[in-house]
Image 1 (tube, chains in turn blue, green):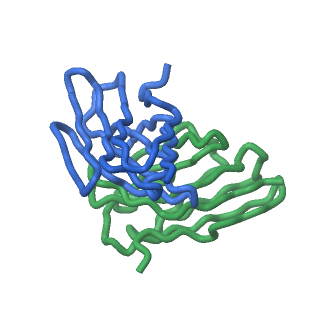
Image 2 (cartoon, rainbow over the protein chains, first blue to last red; image 1 turned 90 degrees about the horizontal axis):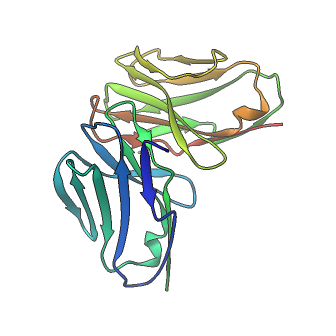
Length: 106
Length: 112
């Protein structure tokens, strides 16, 4: 069992739908990262959080330290949101989930 | 201005060769990293440097040798390349340990 588990592995949605991607981890952490990897391969850091909730535009990330669980939500999804979303935990020695491939159809 | 830049972006080379991937960041960050993404798209840390000092050296074969001439540069040299080294290598940096990480565009290495 991986230390960081993401679900679902693949997700297909229609434009406008509300998206939720989940991340559960088994290690003690001080920070959790959500990353976005575009089809071209580049990786962008979306959020780093250690408690509570963060919002940036249509993206919302939450974390529950007691339950060792985080969610990434996308409101009003758009085809340009199609990417792989990766959860990672730790400080400098990040442990990564296997990613969730999101496809948003027009 | 590219914040974290890696060169080359694509590299095809034969088994047994020695190659280097260069990384530079213009963000003034103290910490730099190398990550490897395998054929299954799974990311794993290889090395971490803080102010030119090696902090993390994961179980990476010693054919891989990072070099940090200054805190803005972290190069990755690979000796005696093997087929299994084929992967995408990402350089990254962060202001300090535990901060947001900024990734380079990745270097696609194919060993034939």
